[in-house]
Length: 331
Image 1: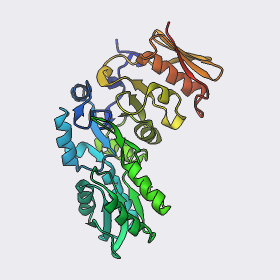
Image 2 (image 1 turned 135 degrees about the vertical axis):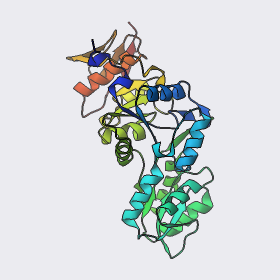
Image 3 (image 1 turned 45 degrees about the horizontal axis):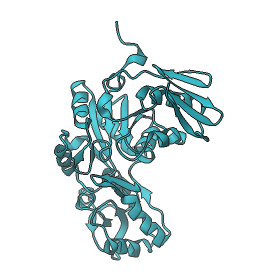
Image 4 (image 1 turned 60 degrees about the horizontal axis):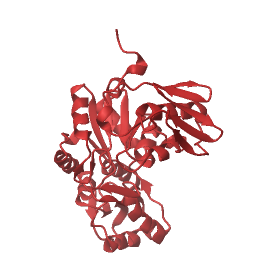
């Protein structure tokens, strides 16, 4: 007898995983427990794997090499990165073969060159656009070159606007923090290539031939919003930036389909929430609305309690967020 829909595991519900890197599979050079094993298990179960990253400091080949250091096998064609989307935007906003000022790492320089443009590090009259991506070495001198160019009104594309970046030492400033330095200095706002724009997820799913992909990440404002905007189910893992509290209080576009503590339970049954009025149940856990508050009951950090809460919010607050407190009440 086949499993009922609500008894299926994550790996039975979906045919592909679109995985974020930093905060989901690793913290810098430090692997996140259970992540590598989960990727291997998904492959054995027949799922297709894509790696979807806003990090513009590495080429696909370098990303593959970095994943290998945390015991995750990958191929360059499985990498979907913000520089790939950025050069597509460049093709729409800058003349073919023109000179582009690159603020970022060598991987972004290579992506721009591979698209037929001429990347440079210093501004000049021949520069037709600016593209900015994360580099740990990006400092005042490069930002100043960007400021000179942007004063002329030429197009500006940011690979992403992530405010923070998880590292092995903690949460550090991300590309968005550096982008904001130029926003503040010039009054300009860039076009954004990476997450939460949906193109990266849509293109990654298409490249894999996936019909039922699941977007997996640790950030509501990039991984989850981007997947939702692409019409893809989303899974928030609590191994990076966001928490249960922020997820349950998020506005609907940033609300995940699922929440798990980590990737260790992808093979476990993932029952759906059953909503009845102002209450939802999932296994032995439940969630209810009490006025403006959301109350979780029964092992409140368990996937079942979180699923009950998400199911209730989807049914009762599909266009608004929780306006009161998120409270827990152990049964």
